[in-house]
Each structure stands twice: as structure tokens, then as C-alpha cells.
View 1 (cartoon, rainbow, N blue to C red):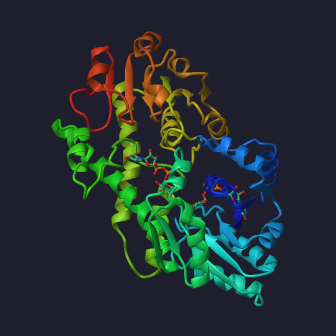
View 2: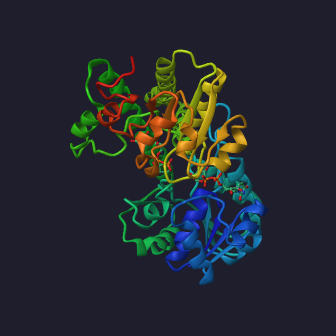
Length: 434
Ligand code: UDX
Ligand code: UDX
């Protein structure tokens, strides 16, 4: 099938490449000409495991093309996915200006029937506006709007696309339904077909629910900490109940990334605009912010005075296996520490290029040991696999004081204590500093 994907960010690029891998002819469009030029040279602007190889393979087979010409992409394709950014506005609502811009452009260049699919996360009823704007700009050609939310986790986005738990299709015509069912048939995944409003809500509700799980377990972790209970055992004991499930019950510094923080806020705002309340999500957000303060206070407790101290930070990305630093907890923690006068040496396997642009006063190091050199304390902010393989005996010799604050519960507290570290993490017993 002929497909256009408008917006080659994380979601658009992964989706376009995977659709090509399934045998479709895909044109990826972006208004950022530099991005398109680099993609056309084979340079992939983001780090996502397996993506570069898959792009190379599908370009070679002529199933995947990159262009900044939206006209050409619209004219040559039948199904058009919109995957441009929907960033938060100051009030937390989703900024839909790019969706509007693209809807207008698509309408102008439509030469025959098209299905225009919302892939970006948008508030419920956005489809009505997309339809309205398209009709205003083209009242001659027939089209359908549909919603097909993405559930791609950065770091495992390709396997999430190829082996999804479910595909959600929000449609309102048989024609659009048939086309989209055909497109997704090769995945052999459960498909939920519903109306467009329901599909839009499924996305916001899913991400908000996952964020709720994280804030819930973080709140329980704080109780564990007070009484000597172990949050990992508590999560295991809860998660084995199939009704609860074990995933997204890892306590730590809280969630970051380009989706959860903005989607939780946007869901609250759209509910309010509709005259409803979903206050539980306000609490989820509040708890998530408190977790960052909790980690900061643990560092403060370990060092007493932060001013003038050297602090090594391991991990900047909002989670492992990505170079994405959007709403990364590490950024907030580093800024809080710098605000108190600490000197920061940091290392991340993939995210440093992005981090350099927004953290000018950090010493970026060539590896983990380098970040720990002369450190009064080491803070683990992202649980990269390579950090789990660090020789901590060596680390201890390099550091000025053997103090570790593990904001991701990555290491074994007993082992660290045995090695002579002053070690603390989140919601686990028997190893509190002081
Ligand atoms: C985006 C949305 O922000 C998110 O809500 C949704 O769930 C998936 O799509 P992401 O792919 O991470 O997420 O966004 P981003 O990395 O910002 O990429 C958006 C791309 O669209 C950028 O490359 C940008 O240049 C491009 N774009 C933006 C256009 O091509 N045209 C526009 O008018 C605006
Ligand atoms: C999310 C959704 O999971 C995905 O379906 C899609 O809608 C895009 O948004 P992503 O943001 O890439 O994916 O990563 P995810 O794995 O969901 O993690 C989000 C944040 O939650 C990360 O900062 C992660 O460290 C944190 N997290 C996750 C926890 O703190 N504890 C957990 O148990 C799980």
C-alpha cells in the first residue's frame, strides 16, 4: 500500500520504517529540511536500537523515501499518518498548531480519496477539528479521518511496533476501516476497532494509567522506607496477581520522557474543558514531582552541604536505550544540584550530545569511571545495562568518598554495603545513609 507519514520524529520515523518493512511503499515527510537531508544521506537523527539498519534495508529496497515536499507525498499516497509533535502549552493542554498546519496542507494537496490518520497523541475530539479544517481547505475531494494511536516505548519501539499487544483503530467509515485493517493484517495482532473518540481516549487513558502505576508504587515505596519494608518484594507480591500485573511497578525517581508528563497533563486539561474531573491524575503528577525532590534530599542527606561538592551523575536519558532527554529526571536533579553550588561530572552512553545543548556547566565525561573521579558522591539516574557491569571496587578507589545514591534501584544494596559503600536507593531497607 502507498503510505505517507508526516513528521519524522521518534514515532513517525519508527512507524514509517516498520510499515516499509511490512512491504508497503512509504514516503516520510518532515518540514525540517536538515533532518530530511541527513536521513537521505543515511544518517539517522535519533538513537533507537535496530532502526538505522532497518532504514538502510528498506531504502535499499526502494520502499522507504524521505522528503520535505508534503505535496508529493499526499498526491502519491492513499493513507496519510500525521505524526508531528503535540507539545504541552503553558497550561498543560496540548499545542495542536502543527496538527492544524498539516491538516490544512494535506487538504490542499489531496487529488483523490485519502484516509488521514492521527498517529500523534491528541486530545479527544481533535478528529472533529481536523475534519473541519480539511473541509474548509478542500470541499471537493472525499476523505476520511481516523485515529491509530501509537504505543511505542523508546528503546524497544521496533519490537513494540512489530509485536504489539494490540492495534487500536478509530474509524467512522467502512472504507477507512477496510484500508487500515488490510494495512495491519500482517502483524497478526489483536485489533480493537472503535469510533474515533474512543481511540483518542484509549491513548490518553493508557499512558495516564501507566503513569498512575508508577506514582502509586513510588508512594508505596516511601511508606516501605519508613518501616523497613522492601518495595521490590512488595511490587513482586502485588504484580503476580494477574489483575495487577508486574510491569510499571519499578519505584525510583519517577517518570520522564516525551509522553507521560505531557499526556497526563493534557488528559486533565481536556477533561476539565469537557466539564469533567480526573483529579487522580493531578495527584499522579504531584507525586512524580515529589520523587525528584526526594532524590535531591537523599543526596543532601548524604553530603550535608552540597555547595562545592563534586557529584558524578551516571545517566541523563529519561530511560535506558534511548538518547532522548525530554523531561528526563536527570536534568532536573542536575539543575537542582547546580543551584546549590555542586560541580557535576556526568556520563551517558547515548544522550550526551543532546544534554550538552541544555546543560552548559556540566563536565561531560568519556565513561562512568571518569564521571566518578574525585566525586564526593555518585548518583545513578538511568539504569543502563552497561552501568550494571561497572567494577565498583575500582569505582570506590576513584571516588573521593564511597557514597552512591541510586535513583533507579539498579544495584543490590547488600552487595554495595558489603563493598563498603554508603549506599541508598528508593524504598529498600537496611542501607540508609546516616
Ligand atoms: C510525536 C508527538 O509529540 C506525540 O504526542 C505522539 O504521540 C507521537 O508523535 P515524537 O515523534 O517524539 O512524538 O515527536 P518529535 O520527535 O517532536 O517529532 C515530530 C516531527 O514532526 C519533527 O521531526 C518535526 O520536524 C516534524 N514536523 C513538525 C513536521 O514535519 N511538520 C510540522 O508542521 C511540525
Ligand atoms: C511511553 C508509553 O509506554 C508508550 O506506550 C508510548 O505511548 C510512548 O510513551 P516511553 O515514554 O518511551 O513510552 O517509555 P516508558 O517505558 O513508558 O517509560 C516512561 C518513563 O517511566 C521513563 O522515565 C521510565 O524510566 C519510567 N518508568 C517506567 C518508571 O519509573 N517505572 C516503571 O516501572 C516504568
